[in-house]
Every structure is written in C-alpha cells, then in structure tokens.
Figure 1 (spheres, protein in one colour):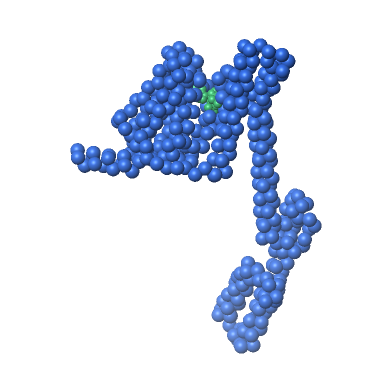
Figure 2 (cartoon, protein in one colour):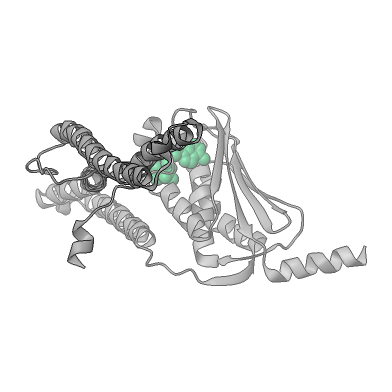
Length: 362
Ligand code: ADP
C-alpha cells in the first residue's frame, strides 16, 4: 500500500516517451525494409533495436520527469511567493499543483468568511445604532416629563394630566417599537409559523377600514374598496395579512399630506392568486428612495421629522409577512402624486372550485 502511494506514474511523460520510441522504431523498421544490407535484417539486430528503444524509453521518461518537475516546481515557487504566509508557511519542495489548488481554495474560503464576518459586524453595529436611536427619543421625552412633574409640575392639575398623557403615549411608542422588532427578529430566525385559513379578503379590508376610520376622518380622507366580486377567498394567515393591510393603509393615511386624499384598495381574481393593491394620491416617494423603503428603520428624509412618522419598521414587517407567504411586494410611486403597493395571495381551494364550476356552467 505504501509503495503504491509513493510511486507516482506520470502518464504524460510515459505518453511522450512512448511517442518518441514509436517514431524512432517506425524509422528503423522502414530502414530495415528498404536496405539491402543483410545484417540489418538479422535477429541479433532486431534484439539490439528493441533493447535500445527500451533504453531510450526509460532515459527519455526520466529526463522528461526531471524537466516537468523542475518546471512545475519553479512555477509553484513563483505562485507560493505571492500567497500569504499563513497559507504556505515554508516553501515545501514536495507541494504539487493539487495541494496548491487546495491551499488557494482554502484561502478563498477564508477570505469569504472574513468578508462575511465584517459584513455581519457592520450590520450588527448599524442595527444596534438604529435600535438605540429609536428608543432614545421616547425615553428622553419620558425623562423630561417626569423631571418637570417632580420639579413642581405635579401640583398643577392641568400640567400633570397633560404630561401623564404624553408619558403614556411615549411608553406606547416604546412598546410598539419593541413589539415590531420582536416580530422582525422572529421572522428572520424562522420562529414564526403561519396559521393558514380560508377567509374573505374583501371582508378583512373592510374591517381594517373600520379600524382606521377615525384616523382617516380626522384628515377628511376617503377609503374605497374596488373589487371584481363581493367575496374573494384567499388561503393565508389572516392575522398577519391584517397586519400587512393595517401597515399599508395607515401609511397611506400618514403620508397623504394633502386635502381630499383618497385611498383605493383593489382586489381582483387571477388564475391562481388574488391580486391586491393599496393606492393613495398622497405625497409619493422620490425614485432614489424607492429601493430602500422596505429596509428596516429606513425612512424617507422628509418623513423623519414628521410627528406621525413611525419607526421605519412597518414596511419591513410587510415584506417579511409576504415573504413567509412566499409572495413579494411591488411598489410604484410618483413623487407628489401618489403611491401604489401591489401583492398577491394564494386563492383558496374553495375559490378555485367556485371558478371551475362557473367555467363549466358557461
Ligand atoms: P414608517 O414607520 O416610517 O412609516 P415604513 O417602513 O412603514 O416606516 O415606511 C418607510 C418609509 O416609506 C416611510 O418613512 C415613508 O417615508 C415611506 N412611505 C411608506 N409608505 C408611503 C406612502 N404610502 N406614501 C409615501 N411615502 C411612504
């Protein structure tokens, strides 16, 4: 076993030596055929030729082996000289191209790992920076209100009630951020299992309209459902989809920024899916900001300073929920004209059955 491992046959050298011997042998045979000298046709001469060719074969093999190894070692030395020392510590004369390839592969893998670690480190830093920034604002306001109350504000009933109300809102804001972050983390670590059921998406949209009615009324906004059928059944996680609709529709309310704003939610039936869109005629988003709006904590600069601007987690949650449903979301927006979000949900088997019956009746 050992011997077999240590003896390496170089098939290239064998092939080259064999070709040389074959050519010489062929020339000798031709010479034997055409010569009239009887000596060159004797058995002794043939034995001599065979022996010589064998010798040429062996010598040639070793010469070629020497040249190949000399050349390849030179090349390997040149390559190893440019590799970092932690990959090749000392020049090892026995290292071959195969080992060299493995070492380069190992180096590439290590570099990729380092790059990924750097990226994760940056991501972690940015994440922690964002979280602390988001938490700082409500925490500082709570601190400010408490200080004012302690410094005598508590004696004045008006100030006391107003500040307690503000503390309550800030605490609620803090809780919302923590809840949103927790949801995103659970989505990212795959801890959320969807609870699929069949439900009427039009009814759910109506329920979300009712929920946000007060907010919309305050800004004299109208919310409209446009649909192809009164009932459209989808197969999805109802609670999560309700969260998607709340986030999209409340954004449309938040970023309307105009009088007589209108929000239109449309539903229509496709072959396998139900298509849903949420469209507003609000302030719109500039094209350069569009690709980033689904990133967590990302807010378009103008909405950062708005008192009703959120934490920048709403659309990240929407994207996660739809991805968990194996669906994507598309956004189209014209700055100062309006925004439209489009997504699909799987049609419920019931809905497909109804469609098939309808087709067969026609
Ligand atoms: P936020 O909590 O700030 O609303 P989102 O993740 O929901 O965060 O949205 C990210 C940003 O995208 C918002 O800050 C806002 O600038 C922009 N945006 C989202 N929806 C709309 C919309 N319907 N119209 C205009 N801008 C929007």
